[in-house]
Every structure is written in C-alpha cells, then in structure tokens.
Image (cartoon, rainbow, N blue to C red; front, side, top):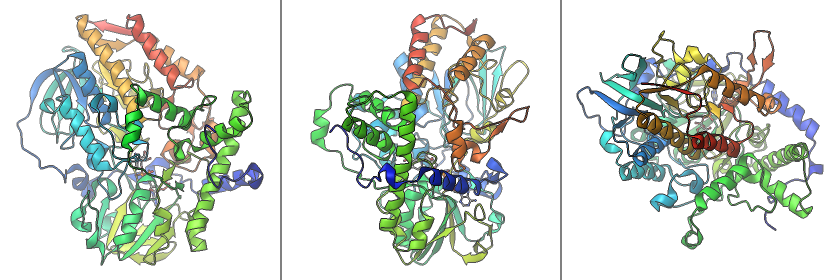
Length: 618
Ligand code: NDP
C-alpha cells in the first residue's frame, strides 16, 4: 500500500451526513455574533505598554536616522528575512529592515509561551534547509529553535548590519517629486526609500475579546504573545511554571495556541479554568525526532518535493500512487482518500466525483476525532463539550498528546461559554461565565490576532499615495486591487506580502519566498533600466482582478457552513449594494487554478521580460 487509512476511521455507513450537517449548522448559528470582527479590541490604552514594550531585548537609545536607501523591508519575520535573502542574492546593498521587535524572528520572536511548537511539518516550514544545511531537531519543532534558525539566516546573509530594531513605523507616504517612499517612525526617523516591501506578517497584532469589564480586572493579565515568565516561573526552554502553584488561572480561547499551552497550565496551576467558546479538533501528535539515517537518504531538491507533496495533501489531492510524505492531521483526508482509491485500482474521478468523496471523508475524519475525545476524557459531560462540530479545516486542525488528558486532572475545569457567545463579564477579581462568578489571580488570553480585520487595524501602518494622499485602506475599501497580489495602482514601488490576491501554498514560508523572489526581480529590472519608479497600470490591475474573478473556485457553501472564525469574517457575509450576501474566505482572495498555476503565471510574466502592466517613470 502506498498510503493507509487512519486507524479508527469510521466507515461511511457509520455516519449520518444529513444529521451532521444539521448539527453543524446549529452549532454555527448559535455562535454568530452580530458585532462580527468588532467584538475584538486592540490591546490599547492601559494594555498598550504591555504589547508595544519588548520584554526580551533591551532597547538601546539611538539617534534618528535620516537617509535615502533603495529598499526598506518593513518586518523581520519570515517574509522580511526572505526579502533580505533575495536582496542579497540580487547584489543590492542599500536596504534596511525595520521592525518593532528587538531582533529577527517575527511571530517566533514575540511568541515564547510554554509548549510553543511549529504545528506544521518543520521540514517543509523552515526555509532554505538545503542551502543552509540545517535540520530541525524534530517534525514539530520548538519555537526557540525556529527563532534561532531565523536569526542564523539573518546572520548568514548579513542582514543585521542594516536592521533598525525597536522601531515602530508610523506612516508611509509616497513622495511623487522624489519618487520615493517617506517612512516616518516613532523614533523620529525620516527614511526615503525607493522601494518598500511590506513584510509585516499575518499574526503581528494581538487582539483581545471586548469582554465587558476587561479593563477593571485587578489581577494579573496577559496575552500569550507576550508570555510573562516572571509571573509564572520557568523560562522558554524550561517551562516549569512553579510560581503558579498557589495561583488560580483562567485561559480564554481554545485555538491552536491554547492547545499547545493548556497541558502546562493544567500541570502547574493550583486551579485552572479553560474558557472555551468553540472547541478545536485535536489529533494525536506523533511528533518524532529527526532520524539522521533518514537525513542521509535525502537527495538534492528534497525540500521542494516535500513541500509540493504537502501542498497536494493538505490543499489539493494526491496524484495516482503518490505517497503521503507528511502523514499528519493536515493531510489525513487526502491520505485516506488515496488509500481507498488505491484499493479500488485508482478509478478515474472527475473533479465533482472527487469533491463528493472528499466531503464524505471530511465527515468521517471529524467523527474519528470526536471519538478520540470520548476515548480519553473521563468525564462524559466534559467530553461532550470538547467535541468539534464543524467541517475539517473550518478551524485550524491541531494535534497534541496531552491536551484532552489535561481535563482528567482534578484541578482543571472546562467552562463552555458558547451559550453566551463568549465570557460574559470580567470583574475586579475574576470573571462571570454562565451566570457564575469565579475568582482568579490571573487571566490569560489566547485570543488570537488581527488576521482579517480591517487593514488599518491589521497593518497598523497608514499608507498614503502621493497624488491625492489617498490611503491604501480607502483605496482597497474591502476589496483587494492588485496585480498578482503584490502591487497596487496608485502606489508605485510598494510591494505587499500575504494572500491578498494570488496563489496560496500550504507552507506559508514558501509563499513568502516566491513572492519576494518576484518582487526582487521587479526591483532589479527597474533599477537596471535606470527608472525611478514602477507602477501597475489601472488596465493591468483590472485585468488581473477580472482573471481572478473568472477563475475563482466558489467555496461559499463551505465557508458559510463553518463556525465563525477569522477565516470567514466571524461568520458574516459581505453584502453588496443590492443586498446580495456573499460568503468568502477572509484570509485573502485566492487564485482558483491553484498554486502551481499561479507559479506559472509569475514565471511566464518574468520570462517575457517586458514588465507587462508596469509603467516605469524616470
Ligand atoms: P485563534 O484566533 O485561533 O483563537 C482564538 C481563541 O479565542 C478561539 O478559541 C476563540 O473562540 C477564543 N475567543 C475569542 N473571543 C472569545 C471570547 N469573547 N470568549 C471566549 N473565547 C473567545 O488564536 P490562536 O492564537 O490560537 O491562533 C492564531 C493563529 O496562530 C493560528 O490560526 C495559527 O495560524 C497560528 N498558530 C500557529 C502555530 C504554529 O504552530 N505554526 C501555533 C499556534 C498558533 P472561537 O473559536 O469561538 O472564536
């Protein structure tokens, strides 16, 4: 057998799909809040210091920088590092990274909570493994190892010498006369950059639930993105949270972060409350150390091959006879499907036939995961509350070998707050859930990030074009307007990384690498041609938007069926001027023909060599 179905997978006969659909719908509907994204608040006012200050690296005072450079890279996370690598490979030297953090690493710089690991196969996720010769120590590797690796790449490519850390960008303004972006920072810098690469990440701004009374709580409180080891005891590499031994702790949220964290809090806190609104699905982790014998078998090109395999397994479908190299929760539906197809002698399936099978397998896998809860959690009522009732990938699938077990501890209590669509209230000394007041010493928030909220909240950097001073947010106004997701008419020499209007690969870092490679091609061409600026023409932008819409794969039904989350705008559809509702994937506008096709679009565009759709000015 090339692949095998997962142990414990129920047969199609064991599940009742219409009944499950009805149950999913009911669970979704009761969670939708009329405020949508507005239910969250930015950690401002009295919280601001905690999120803007850097607890990890001392701030070294410096004089404001006033200079002209070729490229400013806003952000020192994976996308910013990838940009730096490609800048160096292009032979350009006049550039700067600017980051609010004290070092490279992005999310892996800020996040240091106990249990932090990469939830994706690290052999895919960590970039440039073949080039650097580095190998992660395990499949789901630890956060500090990822951060140290990111920083080692920054050293290798000499990115430190140009970096401005502890620097908060306040605005970007295109100066039409200079044909440069003027970057103003809170540190008083005036940097005039020919090109700007926005590498500000997807998970850069923590968000808090707007729970009534949140500001009045007198105990200790923090978001997981700024873990306070002084309070909890332990440290990142040895998270023995011994100072919690006499503390009552509550955690808000049960997403990917919480799943990793809960076992540690359950182990060390005197009393631990998990406040759950929607359960995650949690598979066994089967993490394994990297086998040096396996490493010896790897042939050049192995990482690209593995990433392609992962992408097909997680987001498309395996090819006939293709082995699943990843074998985890992300690829389970497709792995099971290919195992069954193999048994049946690989029948030819149309896209529609495959979709029907995929949907059925989705229900079977989710049922397997619900049965896993019953098998581990002793208290039946708690087990029932922990079961996920939604389609696979409506929420990020997770894996952990101690999460469900934690609920068998006598000091741990699960409090389901779905009935009131979240924690009801906070008081000076604790919180109220389901009408009951609980006293706690510490409230922790694993409540996520500004991923799909309005751009001004998400980016936190006002961006203005130079002719009429129009802001990028007003220009996009809820609907992306780009060429290839990277450049926008009216905003010359500005590049955006992310999923705005292009292909999506299951390995986030691979998306970034490909995007910045394309950006650097453009930068180099513009400079080599002696031009000062490149701007997407309105026609080229409109043509790309049209092409995106014409080739769109409509996933509205699936998105509408999902429980609310940042993927689907908290379950709220867009409403057009005629009152028509449209559900869409909120992470970005994705290229329907898929990642490989998107790569071909970019490669063909570059190989034509004519910068088609860009207007150069000298
Ligand atoms: P999420 O946004 O996924 O989860 C936030 C949690 O807070 C949800 O459980 C949410 O409930 C809950 N919540 C929000 N408001 C309230 C409220 N008022 N009352 C009670 N609960 C509330 O954040 P995470 O930090 O868990 O994850 C964010 C992203 O970070 C992930 O999607 C992933 O991309 C990334 N990540 C990656 C990891 C990796 O290994 N690479 C590891 C961890 C995170 P509800 O679901 O009902 O909205």
